[in-house]
Image 1 (spheres, rainbow, N blue to C red):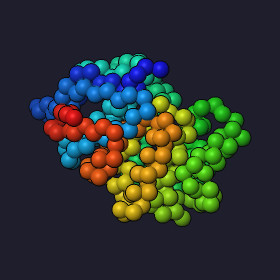
Image 2: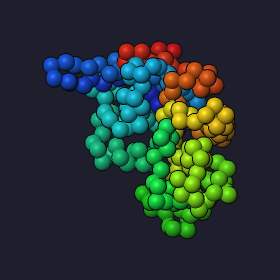
Image 3: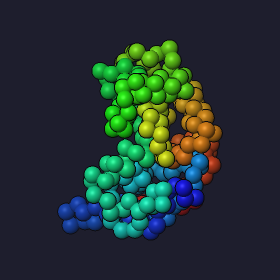
Image 4: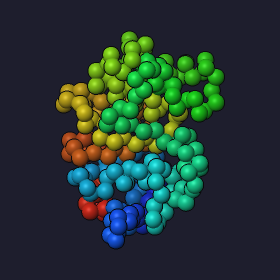
Length: 224
């Protein structure tokens, strides 16, 4: 495994809006080592969402290079990008993005449908992850029967299901009260202590302060 799980080299993303070119990202350089917990901070409109899309292989850069686990993913087609997302990246969303009709275990199992595991293997892994995030007593509840903090725990467990190289957390405490947010942040720290590589995109200075390294975004540019 390369030393840097993530390496962005002179990466830019431009959008055309009529006759105007919007420079969402400009000449971004960034490196995240295996096992690091890193924050990307900045106000609305600074480029954080575009940055997240790049890191999550949800979009391609206009210029520059993105090395993920030592492989350049900048020019991959949609099918290959989808394969990378499924096998190497786990997503934790501010709004949880759970499937309302599925219970806790079934929501955690969703990424495993693409891994070719047997039903028994998927169920065993989902149960272990539910226990890891403290949901062993809520296994068969659906999202609407859970608190916000419990829903985020499901989301975190789901993000870990495919054993990804990189976890991307988009404002993971943004919809939670301060105490619940602190609990979720403690859980992310626990995953980090277990060896996970995390990039947390946030506007919350308290969240950023608890990460090993903080990058600040402004007008599409990234600085330490």
